[in-house]
Image 1 (tube, rainbow, N blue to C red):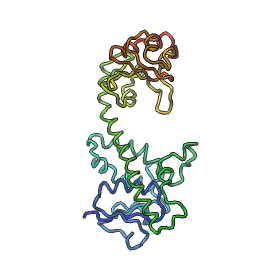
Image 2: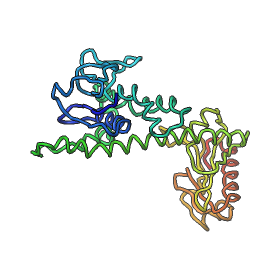
Image 3: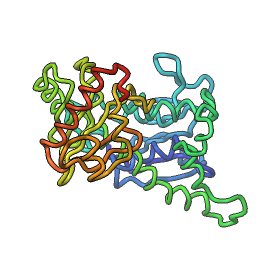
Image 4: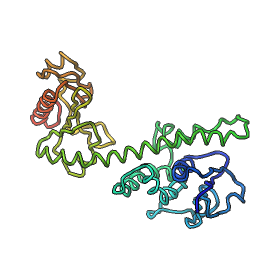
Length: 312
């Protein structure tokens, strides 16, 4: 039967049912989204999906609540919120609706669940404290979405619903951007793996354009690669490789003598005609031709080889 109603609770909203609504409204764009606590409307039916309300988790009845005792748990005993439940059951169909290639759906479903959905589940259930984000806690996605709630003295009888529906496209933009980025990384991986194979034992990886490359380096165990070069508009870019996504430390830095220099000063310091820019933090440099950027990369490698710390 066609889904005609998407039912969640009225009143104040949280990230879990808002993000669940992002998934469900894409899959069922003609269904009416109802925010209610009317028991009659929360009663399961074949044409309804009920989430974050209703007092039970019953996928066959299309009801996905997590507030009951005991609440639903993942295989590793971590708690689900409504978002985790909806993603578990409808996430693959959502990815297909987002035109993710069939061969990438399972991997992206798992990665999005791990990186994006699980933190929402943990925060919503109080299994993780917002304080783990330290001074950035106010900038987490749940906090930002929560800031879109109406202020306490907004006396409009529709204030909560109005705020929810205004927040929905904002939440959608975050989800869709994450999915598009994960899909792009999947597309990039084969390109980067081919480039790694072509580079062989060289510490310089040349790519045809700027693209995500870290996961392919890890997959290929290409620890010998120190720098990446690729075209960027009319110029060419030379970049270092971070040790991980959690640090700014690199496998090797660009030469200290280049730091913060541009144009003629950088040409003189590097000895490379066409050198245009080196960031003061020594993680990126720019030149006007491929030959020039490869010369800069080779110089950087030679200095790393003479000073193993990568400092020059």
